[in-house]
Image 1 (cartoon, helix red, strand yellow):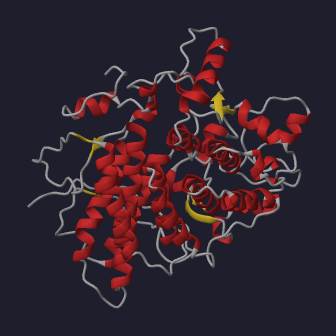
Image 2: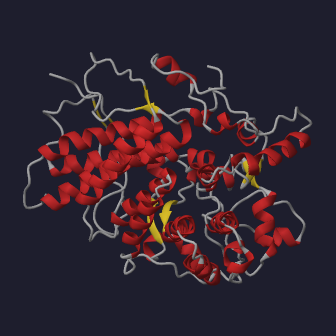
Image 3: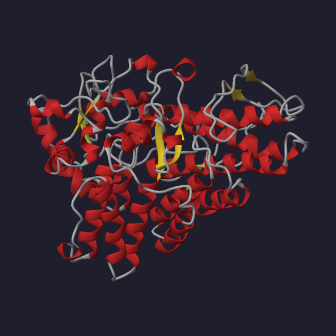
Length: 485
């Protein structure tokens, strides 16, 4: 009998609509198929474990992967890690180069995909429920592989659970395009065919989240026609999703109470008593100094238009008036009666991580429209709708004569709208702007530190290094150039 190398350590978020309760299950380990994946409770626990894997994967990496290498943040605090990340000094020992938890999550999804279909249907476990769990497993597996190819390029692929201690788990790297075309897109297509399209639970991978991810994937692939198709399918769910926040109070709901607003699509719930402190403390904490400080580029853009409702909801504007440097981002935290952000201690941080929301999808759609039509009016309709709601002056299309100029306008709006939400780095990579934007910034930071001015002029360093641990475990893969092992 095979033994499943199974790591359900606690549970993730799940199940009934609107519910943000974490399942309260005992740890499970070293189980065989004969003793698990038999009941509806097993199904709930198994899928909950996948969400726990996402939490483990994004805890800390949410900022390091999506923002810290971009022009959103510069180094802060006293540690070396943030200096290495913001100065493009990554190596195989950099903490965020480790993909262990990402593959842990993929492994849990593989188990669910294999064994959920064998659980018998009953009155309290319908085909719709079983299919919805399967949809989440497929979609989250795709989500994890999408992170993997954007960060490391080609990666090892496994679509079956590793269950036997006698099996050899080594696998070579599969090229990124093959992972995209043969794993990610098929998984998302399958997920959308299975998902319960009536579910509005923003704490799980729902139909809107699958369409949002599909839009993101097709934009990465530069298949703009498909991106328009998936974003249009998302727009057809306008009874459920929309942009509407026109004041700071409603804006904050997106992050503090996402289930109460149509702006949120998919958010990751957090409970520090079960999950530990959320790594978003890297940009705002009631305890330690932030590891990353807001950089001048986005800060000056906020300060140019002080009517932007997102500005005061993101950082303490009184500190700016007083001439004090901003070292905390309060976007994910509530305000007290004195209109000051309430920063939790690191160990008690349970901020809800925003994974996809409506403005993100709409602005990706604007990018796709810009790439596929000479008529830019629909592009500015989207951009200006968001700008007007957020308190900004609409843009005039005549001021952006070329396709690249229009793309710049969209990216600028995404930077303000999605600041700190793990999107900016991937926007720069997707649009081929990393060297252009980051080389002068990295050189400037190096001059401030009086160190060798190497800049960011090597496009090979856009990819992350593979961790030494992964290279040691899997001898069939080699390091990304030009990093050393």
